[in-house]
Amino acid sequence: MEKRFLTPAETAQQISDNGRRVLTQPLTRTFLLSLLAGFYIAFGAELSTIVTADSAAHLGNGISRLIGGSVFSIGLMLVIVCGAELFTGNSLLTKTALHGQISWGNIAENWGIVLVGNLIGSLFFAWLMLASELWQTGQVAKHAIDIATAKCQLSFDVAFVRGILCNWLVCLAVFMATAARDITGKILSCYMPIMAFVASGFEHSVANMYFIPTGLLLKSHLDLDIPGLTWENFVFTNLLPVTLGNIVGGVVFVGFAYWYVHLKGTRSI
Image (cartoon, rainbow, N blue to C red; front, side, top):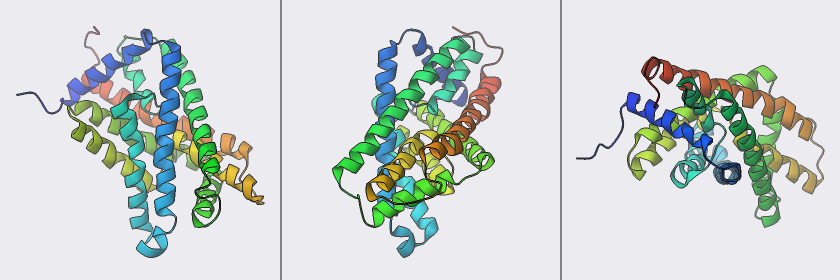
């Protein structure tokens, strides 16, 4: 009977082997797949914005976060099942480099392309939501602006730590989804950790590439004066520290940890 999941050691090896795609995958394909990942995470983010716009007032903050995290998880489900290049998940490429299967230069090139692609995809999706006129005004628009404003008011240290905690869970979700051998297992593997990081209030760089620009576009559309909600703060107050934290969370606590436990000292193929 076919195994329904891989062991942790087998999963670590599988992730390491999967990372070798950067050696042969055309850069145009990497870029296109990174655009798709930006779209997919934005789908989850906009849905989370809608369902949490008034749920806290009726259900309480904790339940509202649970619901928001639950629907947000569709983003990683689409990335994993349909296939896309997501920067946060690609933190696990370090496992492949540590195992001697790709170079650190390969990782730097991949991260650079994927970050740009994720950003462009997220920005384009934010513009599409504004152009859709589904919630340019009203409670949902206000909630979207509030989300973006709060993210731009975090201190560098806080944003960095929340980024670590976020991608620790995201990469564990990728790890478990790789271990799962069927669609149901992959979906459940994505759901629990992603729901947990959103409900906990952690910070995801690619999600914020949608959340904050959406608030900025709505601010401009409604001609609002909101101190702190600026493109400069988006980049330097949130995106920079969160991205650095995401790298640490994924590379150190998942990539390095499981390479050291399961692959260190073994031969690369």
